[in-house]
Length: 135
Image 1 (tube, rainbow, N blue to C red):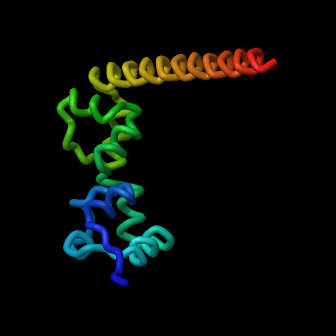
Image 2: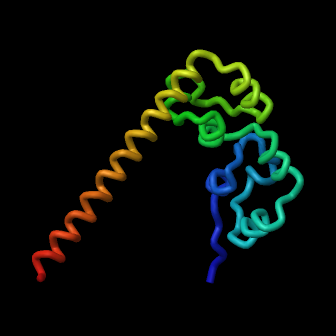
Image 3: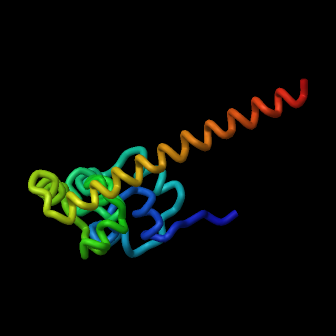
């Protein structure tokens, strides 16, 4: 049976790191499943450093800033790979786009929560009606 491999980009995405900031050896060769598990269980110094200080991939930057990846794109930062220090600076002194995008994200979360609560209520009502019909 052949060994399962994953592309470096896939491994970087699963590890939550920015591929271009990884060592050349990581970027050059496919990674076996065993090597990937070893990276997760006992991360080398370079991986620990990347996770702590970055640069971070777009999805992680968006999460740390509290905005969506689309919000980063609207701000012209779609391909931005920011360090932890740069993210902290943006959070300390937020530009207008960040304030707007964080408000938009908060509104989206509130709408999603209301929708989920409504749908849960509908499920409960449907279950109660079904129970009544069976009586």
